[in-house]
Length: 134
Image (cartoon, rainbow, N blue to C red; front, side):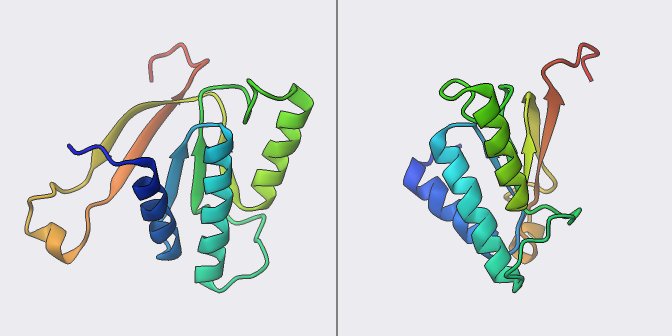
């Protein structure tokens, strides 16, 4: 599996968001927050909705990280809570204390079906405080 450089990952994430795909961003640093906000904005513009639908169940951008809050290593807890609230207002699904268990693909890349429909990735996460090994 080839490893992509950060500018390529960024451009692919923005392209996927502009095409209406759900984008999962792993991390809680400044770059992850900025990319999540930009992908949410691009996704909203692509869908034609200029106002951010706060009560939408179909979130298009997910922000996954293992710490208690975004940028919690750099800013106080009350500021991290304010950042989380603002990200959710932008339509970003913020999943704190989430650890990635595995990522699966519904069809192999070499399959003839992948030429017709691109393969879909699924990210399976578990909360860091879940002791049940679910």
